[in-house]
Image 1 (cartoon, rainbow, N blue to C red):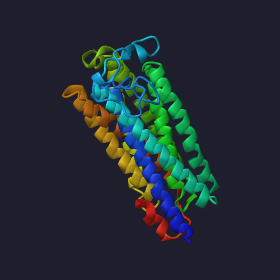
Image 2: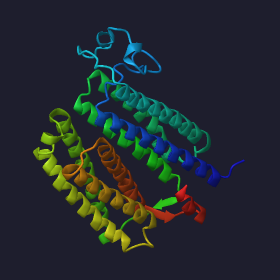
Image 3: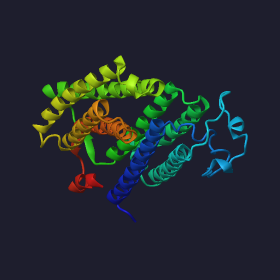
Image 4: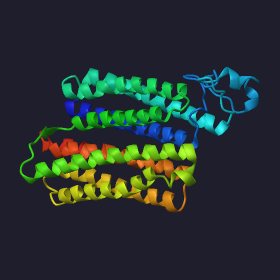
Length: 323
């Protein structure tokens, strides 16, 4: 029979696997948006009425554009690249769903003693159902920008819930922050909220580029504000990270995740500068958004560890952080 520590270790591995799957889904979803492949499969949950989409337009019926019309609009002309990018996005979503089923099943089987952890885990399938419904609305609304934005932020909630469940399985205790650390905690949360605002501004920039093209979209006020605002986000988190760096013994986990957040923010700014001034390509757009979403997750968990940094168990719990 597995010991409690071994059960927690298996849970952390499962949670980490689901978290990685969610990020693959996010990367695929961003690729869909960047390539304009959201209508690559005009119906849902099938793709052109099939479980596996065709490779050639000749494999579709002659009237496929009328047959798969959405919202009174003809289906887009068949493009194998767009169709298969959207199809792979859906396949990854199915794999992530199966991973969630496995994670929830194991949690209720082996981790029932951790009540708060069960709450976090049980939120994941509920959010996944809502995410699937919104994904259907993305297609049904013919890629309405506000629906796509909601879809993206639901993806962030899914990754945050999974990461919280993973973190809560560590042997940690909540510790009150005293004196100046109360201010630094508020500063950290403010920086994190600013990062969310920056992500929303990025979605507005993406909408402008989709509607008007990159040349005009990159001259819009929303892009100029988004570009300048990135330095505010970077500076506020840099100060928070510097304060944590000066306290390596008191906040080891928060310090580590804050550093990863800082690296992600720097990479995001560099990618944004390259796209804005040199090379506006789909691959860079995908990396730019995926790195930003990672920064949101790592920043959140850093702030969680700032409040939960005293180990209640053995040193094994600390060493399991890398699992």
